[in-house]
Image 1 (cartoon, rainbow, N blue to C red):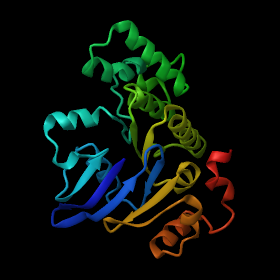
Image 2 (cartoon, rainbow, N blue to C red):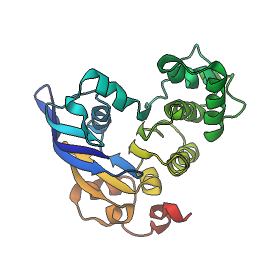
Image 3 (cartoon, rainbow, N blue to C red):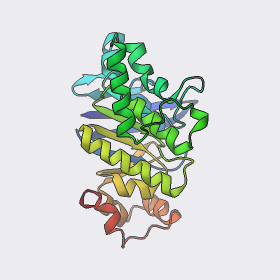
Amino acid sequence: MIRFEHVTKCWDGRNVLNDLSFEIKRGEIFTIVGPSGTGKSVTLKHMVRLLTPTSGSIWVDGMEVSAAGADDVRQVRERFGYLFQGGALLGWLTVAENIALPLRERTKMPQAEIEGRVAEALRMVGLEGDGEKYPNEISGGMQKRAGLARAIINRPEIVLYDEPTSGLDPVTARTIDHLIQRLNDELGVTSVVVTHDLQGALLIADRIAMLTGGRFVEVSAPADFVATEQPDVRGFLDAQFIPKTGLHEMSARRNT
């Protein structure tokens, strides 16, 4: 569904992405992990043409978005929902008004239909009754859920998550992880998750990709990812105290 072909992105004489090639399948949860500064968020931004590669090509369902004109890029972006790292809620709008914003800005949908869509999105993320609150009146985890409701309000085919659990306590982080999994299943979307939280990735991912040096050094299912001998992956796993064995419960997310 999403395909990178030999993508390089050069900034200040450094290749942030370096001949990167991979493909994301329709309907899967594809999780990108790796150290800070390795280009994880840069990879997401290329998918929706917020960035353009220095060389190489990016495809979404047969369209080369890296070379598409403005009208085609707008059409491709309508297929995506994007949860930004900080939630990116506007403080002077209520939660409901934040969630409704994409519909008000991009469509001519009647007010009653917008309100119905917002109520549905609030229900899906467990924020019923919180729509009239302002962002500073709700917790960090609730802000992330409100941001996710806004990301799905247009009923996208693909949802991009940029560090969805950053800054959250472990219990709240796991709540967000399970929400990502549930929405992926219920909405039938394709999910791409950038995260430092390897435990969360092991819980929800169909495949995990490790990005370092501008390339993926490992792309595999959670159980294979944990068992690999690839040195960069092993160092990343060891830094988060994740052993090679004993993670069957984490990697079998679909059976819980």
